[in-house]
Image (cartoon, rainbow, N blue to C red; front, side, top):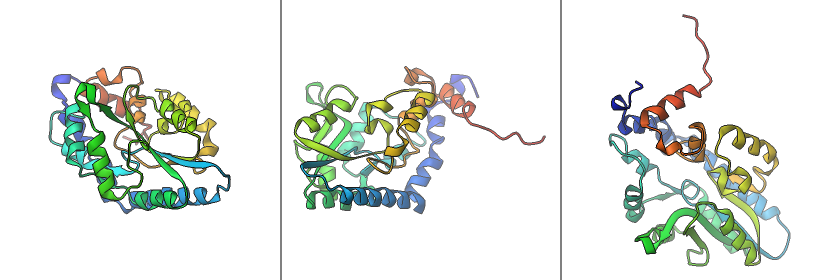
Length: 256
């Protein structure tokens, strides 16, 4: 189907079913999450430098699982939006990614600080503030240091570097950065095309499993916008997005 009238957001939502099933049901997802936090603990323990040490973490799909939100869109003719995301956030029902709570409590127990750098918006002047519900959800799950100092939500730009810089300015040395999206780590990954992002990973390949700890997220992220060509990709219709997803796949040609 190529005509927008024939292919809707409902159809596009259904294309995420297999990814959602993998995240929610596969033991492999659970294993990869434990692997990520096991490596993080190993690297944390290996750091013998002094001073104020910090771990900088993303929240969504790094510490908490929001896949029920995306699964709830199946069968609906609408997708992610400020109002739907707010409804989900204020339900406070996201669950913890395996291994996340134990590792971050270990960091604090061994003298470190945890800074939560998330692009959930805190814009009370616009009557849109996800900070209270996010903090409630994280506290209920047992995450440490859930307070105004350590919670760094988005107040203006979605770029995370200014918030990471502010942690350094407070006198902390960042030992680890943990996320599910490349932009959670460094400005070098802020590119919005597949080729630029791939090159950035190649240029920083030695940092993964060392300073950068990556969690798997096949459901959404900047990678999807890169598949669509970057730029104002969100303006593309559901039909256009579906076609691009298929066109960018490397395909084996079967004999007819």
